[in-house]
Length: 151
Image 1 (spheres, rainbow, N blue to C red):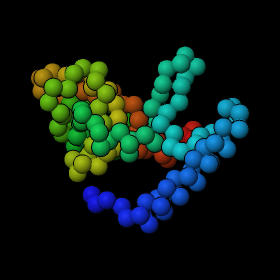
Image 2: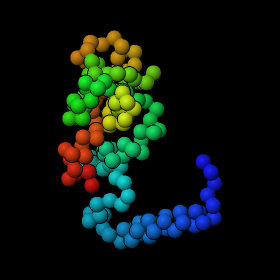
Image 3: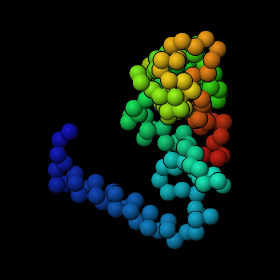
C-alpha cells in the first residue's frame, strides 16, 4: 500500500469529517427513535445478550480464525436457515473447538454466514453423515427473509 499524497489525505479526512458530524447529530436523537448509525453489527436482546446480525459478516469474515466450508449441495439448505450436517461439510479449520464461533464459506471461498461448531475438528471426522456439525446463527439469506428486522 502506498502512502497518500497531501491532496488525497485532505480529501479523505474531509470525507470522514462529514460522517463524524453525522454521528454527532445522531446523538441528539433519543435511543428509542434511532435505528442505527453506520453498519449494524447486531442487537441486544431483552436479557442483555448480544445477537450478531448478518450485516456484520463482511467485517468478521476476513479476520475469522475458524472457518467451515460447505459443499455446493448443502449451500441452499444453509441459506434457508438450517444447520450444517456432516454430509454437507466440505472442510473445517484444524483445531476448531466445540462451541467455537465459525464463519461459513462456500467451496468457492464466498462468505455465507456464521454459526457455532457443534463438534470439534476430530469429532467431525468420525460422526455419521446426518449429525449436525455447525449450528446455524446467521446467513446471507436473511437479507431476503428478514429484511424488515435487519435495521
